[in-house]
Amino acid sequence: MVTTTVAAPPDALWRAWTRAEAWARWWWPHWPDSRYEVDARPGGFYRACSPGAGVGVHGIFTQVDPGHRLAMTWTWEGEVADPPRERVWSR
Image 1 (cartoon, rainbow, N blue to C red):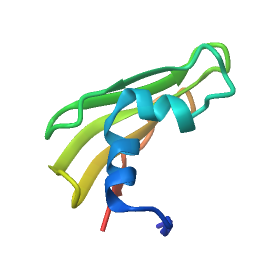
Image 2: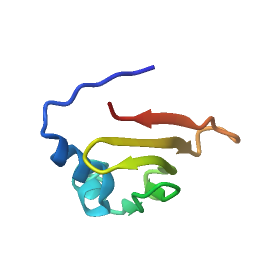
Image 3: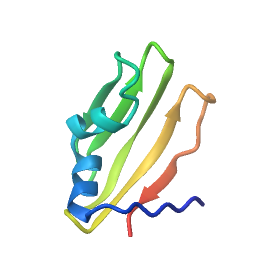
């Protein structure tokens, strides 16, 4: 388990994790071919990938309580044939 505390207002963090245009500002902005999909609702899919760098991550939002709680699965693409689905959540 990895725990991180971010010194930012909850609404700013919420926007950073639930909007594709926000991901584009902080998740791999140095790779110009990076693409982002974010459907922040329970059961909604997200994906961030950079084909040129050969990396990607995707998952499903499992809990969405705007401004309070966000939980999702997390799967790195391309690392192993059947990668584990990790869990990410806010407190």
